Amino acid sequence: MILDTGSPLSWLPERIWSQFQDGVDYVWLSYPQGYRAPTGRVVGWSFTFRVARMLAPVILLDSATEYPRPDVIFLFADGNPPVPPGSNAPPYVMMGLWGGLLDGTKLAVTPNPGTGGVDGTLEF
Image 1 (spheres, rainbow, N blue to C red):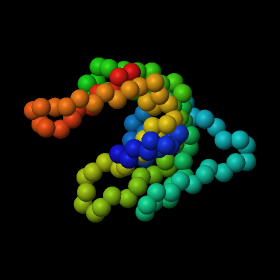
Image 2: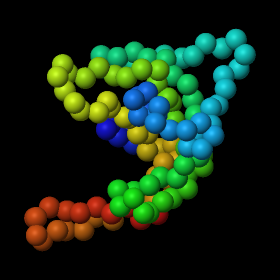
Image 3: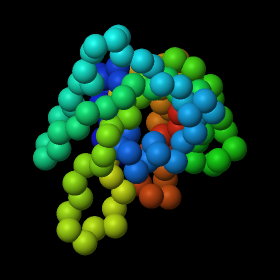
């Protein structure tokens, strides 16, 4: 996953978004008539995309904590970024943190004496 703290948009490869349900998890946002789909580019990959507004809430790793984020917009890529030959790694997802996904949240960082590192917790 790539985090872009300044991006108002996030994009998902087709391998990820194709598991979602239109009208349940997202709704398509249409382009004006006659407008061609734009092209996105990241290192080693160019892609066209469609734009969708997410309906499903953000679900944290505990699978029980949900936060509605009705204004989050995603670019749904047509296709998937390349992965190294023989790799089973999932395709990259780019999360733009400026675009509503984490609006109104705080990151609380505390020392972890057991590991010598720090722990971070999102506070919604």
